[in-house]
Image 1: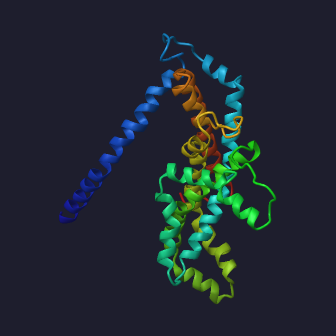
Image 2: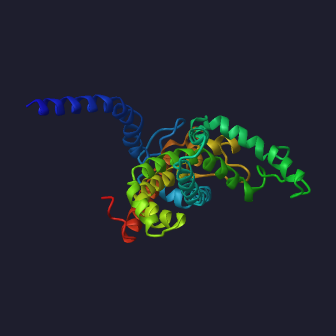
Image 3: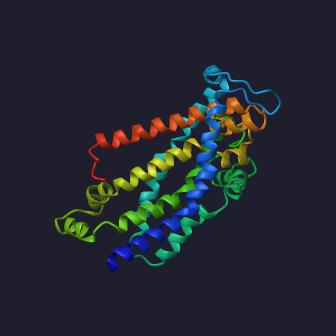
Length: 298
């Protein structure tokens, strides 16, 4: 009886802790999504009457060159996912060792995560400018003879923004992988070393397979974050995705349609298409991991 009361008390406490987050999720996520779905089938605008247009917004999107440019750039941005995941796993393995000043390095790697994205984007914008610190070092080392326009060169601009996303995300995913590493029984690694396995073999044969549930989680979050990237592009290149739309991604394009062109219906349709794309990529990622035999996380 006492155990039952204690269990109920814990459940009440857990629900009490979850309630504020659930309320915020309903107000700022579920409600806007539910409210925005009907808008995708209208020509809702701040400057005109609202009429039901059916699938015309979607037909317009599929014939809109800017939409395809933004979609291409968003899919290209997914390149950051394997880079972030591989580097964050290596960082987690490094700081999981009992080294001197390891706590300092854990904190140092996590500092970019708590840094304001606006401040980080402004700092990196200065780094990539023609008179910025990157060109200064490259010229000092003799790598280049004249400054490179990282911000103004269409072929380089998007990759520059990717560097900001990678820099900001490494520490976050490192902490998740570090938690995963510390949940792995040390006896397994010790047994592998006794059997003659080297450091790399232990990581590849023991650590990585047992980390796969964490890899799946981090990959899902990273893919969704990459497709929804907004802040760094908006701060560094503006709402038009300059130069010449080379950094125009779907989230920025959706913002431009809604808050510059005041075409909220079409913006909602583009956002719905992007949401469906994220859903498809998520399903494919789940199926890929299952085909690879990674079903033990269920």
